[in-house]
Length: 234
Image 1 (cartoon, rainbow, N blue to C red):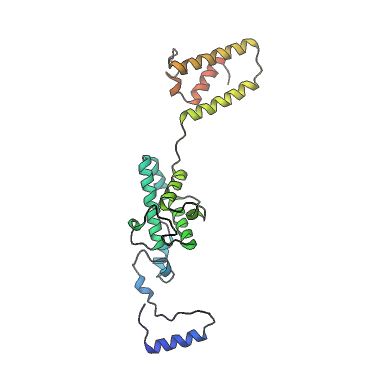
Image 2 (cartoon, rainbow, N blue to C red):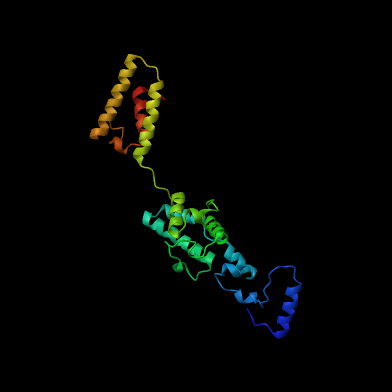
């Protein structure tokens, strides 16, 4: 903002009195002074040259590259990458000098985030991650650390344990057995095979070269293949 001359001040006063608005501010703005300054504070962003406005509005980043980076990283590294992302986008939305100025555990409202800048942060993170994030993101997850944890559940969910998938397949097998009509001989064959499988699970031994050495290491598909081979079913 520059200084007003007497003439400019009187002209601004006259213009303000004639303006149809209830509140006006006489000020000599110099938008060109914002050129090259990043980040631009949200209160001044609308006054900035268009290239600065465009840079401030976008979230930047490559969602595909982010996912690839997370997929090959350990849990601690995933958390660090996402927290750095959130802090960087929050610093840009609030006009902080650097991401280091953002306290990961401090509430957004305490840092001056309002509904408008909250939506901007959501938009930035959506652009950076490729996720469709809710407008209430900063209220549902009120700190940078909370948002980073939420993003991790969306981008790098905990891998399901192999045993959980196996149990699900066994549940399907159980339901299938209840629906099969079989005579006494067939039931005896099925029961014998199931007992054999249970025994291999218990002691880990396998006397068939073409089958996996340990049922613990077998996939659900291998388990059902064993049953199919035994019963000659499909």
